[in-house]
Structures are given as structure tokens and as C-alpha cells.
Length: 173
Image (cartoon, rainbow, N blue to C red):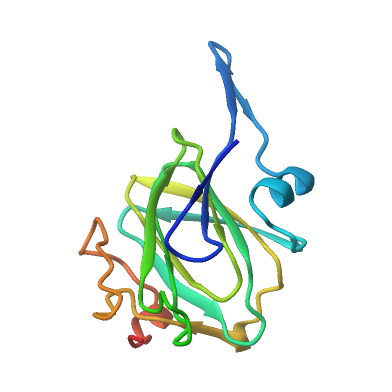
């Protein structure tokens, strides 16, 4: 397994070992012991989620206000441009983001520690997106940042995106 540091503290790109041949492939998607030692994930995962979306759907940027979730995200079918944004005004990287393509061929995962805003844009015809969370989702605690926040200036691969009504209401930082 290869772990790639990013400009945001604790945010890491993970490239698991993939064993493949003419029959297909095998990969370990999570091992508490290995991910604690190599990635630094010490929190327990308590909820798994699976999202399916069509091309052009943009989900995010989301965060939990008082009960922040850490997320280990990946794609099992299709491709997304995945973004993690630093929304902490006290942070030296406030207003910066990490963007990475996650897809079924590169097998990459992204570790999003608690406290960051997260979102993704579907760049394939359809995607199956999965993520493990370190806390339960609480709709009353959810917050968000506009996907096109000028301060973040995220270079999304698509500009003609489909947003939920909720995501359309978010303002910038």
C-alpha cells in the first residue's frame, strides 16, 4: 500500500495493493491495523455508505458542524473528481483544497479527517461511490460550502453540474 501526503494536514491519498490476473483482481479495502500504522487512522468506523450518481452530479461540499466525521472514500464503479477543502479559519491552509480523481481502475482511496468539507463530481456515465465514516450522520448538524466558492476556486472538471436543492443553498466561505 502506498500513502501519499497532501497539502492539507492529515488528508491522504491511498493506493492499495491490487493483485490481478486474467480472472480479475483482489484488493484489501481496509484493515484497522494496517490503516492505523500507515495512514494514521485511529478512529473507529461506525457507518458505511454507498452512493450512486450519474455524470454531472456534484455532491457537496458537506461537513458536520459539531460532530465531524472522518471519511475513507473510494469508487467501486466509474469515476469522480473528489475534493477536500480546509474550512477552518484558524488553519494555515484555510481556503485551500485537494482534488483527486478516484476511479475503478486506479483503485485510489482518500482519507478525509474530521473537520474538512468534502464533495465530489461524477465524471463517468455513472458512479458507485462508497465511504466509511467515523461518526453517524446527523441531518440537523450538517453544513456546507458552495461548490463554486470563489475563495476556494476549485477547478472542477465540469461546470455544467447537477446539484441537490440543499447544495444549491450553500454560500461560500
